Length: 186
Image 1 (cartoon, rainbow, N blue to C red):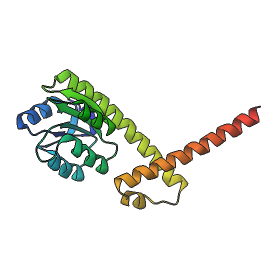
Image 2 (cartoon, rainbow, N blue to C red):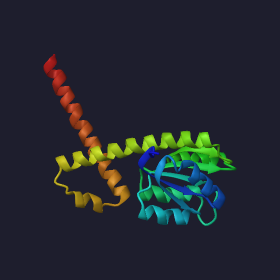
Image 3 (cartoon, helix red, strand yellow):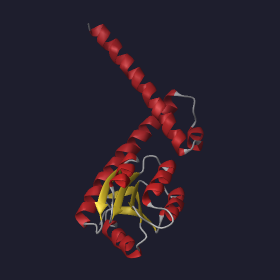
Image 4 (spheres, one colour):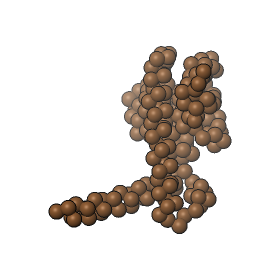
């Protein structure tokens, strides 16, 4: 059987070992790279060693809960897509998770079809973000003196700021070209 998302890495984070096993078993046919962690601290260790695209994490865990974990994961990979699982969500936690960029909030016990729909959406979003990043990096190397090694040495948040600036500059150049073309058409 062919894996649906072969290049997408998923990290499952929950303090319930049985739930972690069940989640991994459910998503295994769709994803080649699945990692697990029992809390936020372990999740950060996994994410520093592996390029995580999607994280499915419990809101409430000992040592480090889901919200602080996502904050730290975003420092490692600002494009990470998050799905939260919870048995008891309050509005403040939901707001904070959404502010951090969480895509979904699923209630425990998780329904398999809801989880797979959320994962499909997450994998598609992750692919779009990855492609956007590759395009911006290619443009960056094409139109600047920056070498690949220089860019790779930047920290995650520095890369994001740099790419955002490059995107803004390119958008301004494209707008200028559009205005020039429309001027000559008149």
